[in-house]
Image (tube, rainbow, N blue to C red; front, side):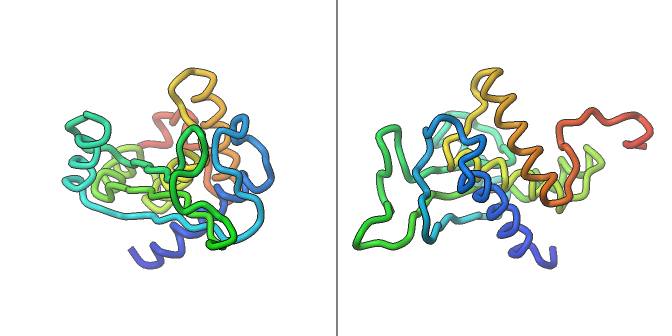
Length: 167
């Protein structure tokens, strides 16, 4: 996909902008970004690789579209923290199963670029401490995603699709 690096970078920066404004990222559970450089990686992998990660780290032997691996824990950074010796805050990794993303986009009649942006935003929000384990958390995280994506010119990925829009 031409321009995939720029697309992922743009989506990640948009999600990080939400955190830098201090809006929406739940109760300070994520890392304090402060000012300065932030580093994270976005990995585009095949379904087999993501399935192996999902099995190893989540106990689910199935592919999934996105996994996030933050480098901080409940008590704060566990590595890569900004400090006098390190001017960069390392957040972690977002791993995306490109084959799954492509198949989902097709089955949901979405542009693959839009779906990929959504999953990058979703993964970065997880790195920032957002989650969707409970209904209130899911509602809040989805609202953040919709807001970030709107700023990128991408429609609400959770909006019901009419039969006419998917035909």
